[in-house]
Image 1 (cartoon, rainbow, N blue to C red):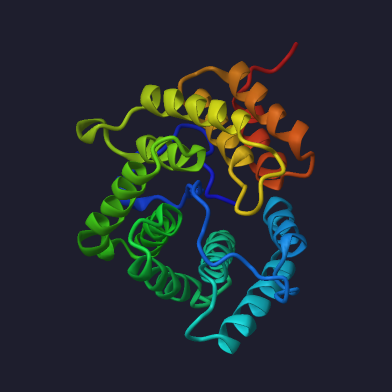
Image 2: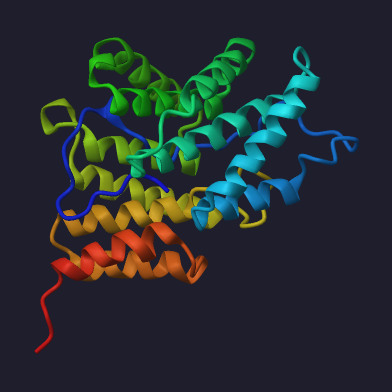
Length: 270
């Protein structure tokens, strides 16, 4: 799952983000009827693995995507490259929680595939925004990269927001950036809360059965809970977390990390 912020939200530069990146416009390169391996059932399994933090299944999905891409090195659908980058990004987030796991090359592979997509499709807001998140993860692993990758990450996020301003996942991405951006550079919890609520309103207008990529609802509620908690609204935070569990009762980021952190902050009942 995404990196959590137990207790007070820690201020970091915008490029230090590892957040749920916005997806909103359709990715070119739709799967044909002959591409039976990577279909909606595959994406449903991928998303479920993210929700329950099932690393073996994510690794299996990664292997399937790598195999399919190796068979079509020059004409693979953009969707496949994006999906592999997304899977790598999620796997690296899990790796950061496990101090014993070495770098699996996830982010470099993600970066390579996303560069390929945006080079061919400059207006692809989905791939560009995810690339910004990948840069953020790379900086999180090595702060010395901030001077070079930080501006690149910010540029990706700004361009994605310009190209898809009403995309709920783009709004989500920008909202979380406001969580980590220092106040002197435009970040604030109040701004983040406003944009997270806007993202949720946009998600409510989007069909729940929209074709993949269609994730972001759970991330929005998880981040909203953290922002409310950071502002002292513990009841509001709990409501946001419980709302996410109403959608997915086995959302491990909430059940195993965020709710326990909130419980530790909440006043003990007599």
